[in-house]
Structures are given as C-alpha cells and as structure tokens.
Image 1 (cartoon, helix red, strand yellow):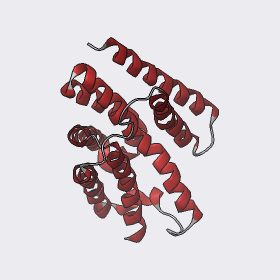
Image 2 (tube, rainbow, N blue to C red):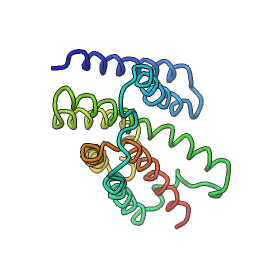
Image 3 (tube, rainbow, N blue to C red):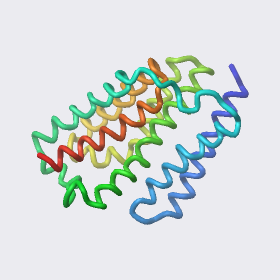
Image 4 (cartoon, helix red, strand yellow):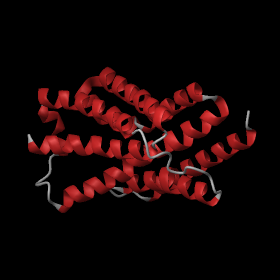
Length: 207
C-alpha cells in the first residue's frame, strides 16, 4: 500500500469536507450551498493538486462518447417520468429561458453538480485506484457519489418514489464511475452532469 498517497488523499478529503462544512454554516442564503460545494469539492482540491504539482489534474481529454453516453441514459430515465407526470417537475419552471433567473440557475447548478464529479472521480476514484486497485476505487466512488446525492434524493423521491430514487442514484454512481474508469475524462463527466440537469430543465420548460 502506498501510505503517502493514502495520507495525501485523506488530507484532501478532510480539507474539502472542512471547507464545505464551514461555508455551509456561514452561507445561509439561497445559493450558499452551491458556493460551499464548489469551494470545498472543486476549488480546494484543484488548488492542492496544482500546488503539489500532481499530474493530470483534469484527467484525459478522450472517451467523450462514453462519458456523455452515461449521462444520456440518465437523462432519458428522468424524462420518462416527466412525460408521465409533468406536474411533478413544476419546480423547474421559469418565466422564460432567456431570463436572468434561468441564467443564474444554470450557473449555480453547474457550481453544485460539477464538483461532485470532480471530487468523486478525480480525487476519490483516481487516487484510490492507485492505492487499492480499480474495483475498490469504483466501490468507494459509488459510496461517495450516493452520499453526495442525499439532497437530490429528497426531491427525486417525489418523482420516482423512494425505491426508484435510490436505484437511480446508485445506478448513476456505477454508470458514471465505469465511464470514468474507462476514459479518465473528468471534464466529460462534469459537463455531462451539468447537461443532464440542463436537459431536464429545458424539456420541462419547452414541452
């Protein structure tokens, strides 16, 4: 076991969790959570990797088909519920798609969801793969992914039910983890996660 790498990983995890916890406590306004997530689980680890001169901070720029396809599956999964019961997506309705409200929603959504991919894939999965192997790394990534999606479970269960929401989150963690395992393209995962939310919102406002 690479003990130095394990200590490095744990240090980043504690730092990220600490920054997130402090900012979550301090930033009580509407989009404070998104800022706390971005600072704790994206900005902080990226700065640490840059300062310590780590390689491939943003992963590989390949395998875009696999990274985006993983999120395409999830998009169609959610939209299947939309076309059955569109009223359950009323919270995603905006006055118009050109409004400042929708622009800000996109910005804060990106700040909220993209760091989840960066932290769970580039930090947890990438670093633990070098320590424990790919299979254990995938399992740990799925665990972190599911824990990070507890807030999403609280609104997904209103659409899919408790079991459906749980299965969706678990499957999404496995599917995106496998895509990252194959490609090591963290940018593809981050953009795919944002596009998933954007796609749902667009459909909810157009149809």
